[in-house]
Image 1 (cartoon, rainbow, N blue to C red):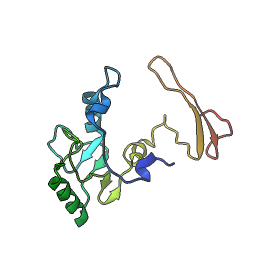
Image 2: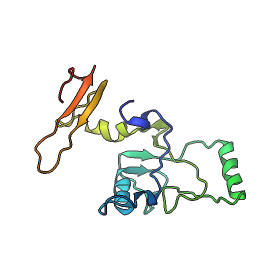
Image 3: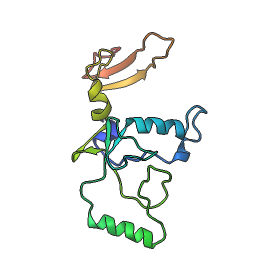
Image 4: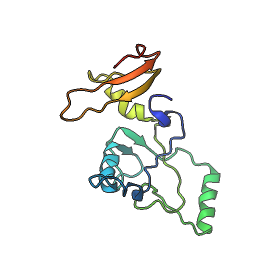
Length: 162
């Protein structure tokens, strides 16, 4: 648990998912729609003129500064075994063996909280509560003026509504 979720604690592999994973979404949401937002949020330092990547978003994505020799040998073995190499698994296809890109910037972890939350911390309509368990979340809709969230724990009043 932490601000930024898994991007703050796990390996920083940048993998969007297979385009076919989006086929069962409602009709107005699909891979093409999602790709627009992936590109908008991404700041990829390796793919500057790709139709699959963005370069102006807050989420930094990069190739590792150093590649371990075993990684090169593994990819070569996959190619020899007939799997094929895929230079960009977030591009046209995921098929093949790839070297991971990661959500890093200047050699440092770049979590979702660094990319999206920290730049918004000064907003008057944002309150971050930590050490609290969330029991209920209401969504703000265009025709509803506000929402409420019930929390409990160290970071909130017992049983309080934020």
